[in-house]
Image (cartoon, rainbow, N blue to C red; front, top):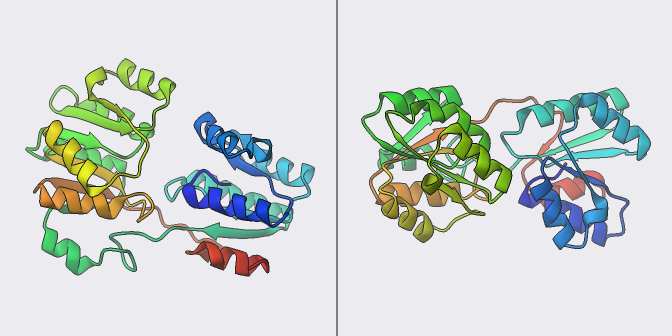
Length: 259
């Protein structure tokens, strides 16, 4: 299950080793990336529930499921764990490191020094924080799904969304009531310089993000926000008890005995 940069690397390495591998992604955009790599034949597109995953495991004679989904794709991981248990196969979770929680790239002492970092438990708390704040120009870097939560603030705040360049998602954002000029359809992650340029161009005074780790460009978001002296609201990850969890790709291959 590989709708992330690290997931794609795992698939490529398995394929290069001649392993029999099949992968799943949630969106057509994710499948297009595999097609461009010449690996479209390995890819199944769709959000699979537990029963559908179990059926795939049976049909493809899967003996190991590697869950390299996004850190915030909680339901996908829960489905993968249950399907693996029910099918009695090995489950391995690849979980990229956090940036601002314990053991992350940026320690608590660093965030304390910044002063502009605000940790919240979930998306609803992020919406509440923004609603109560006197900041008016909000940039969502939390993906398309968050737009619907924040659009309720559009009459009191100026909402900007930075999403993947997927026409259907752009259209839905506009249909929700977000101004077309406020939809930034770009593929990340982004450099400090580009983040800063976007903040300055659109006069952003608060950024909302998930703690997607270094690969997700979170350290760059934090640094550029702190240098611009604007607030950054970071949504914590859900806590899941993974049966097996790795934080490096090499560790995944070692657990498989294919290092």
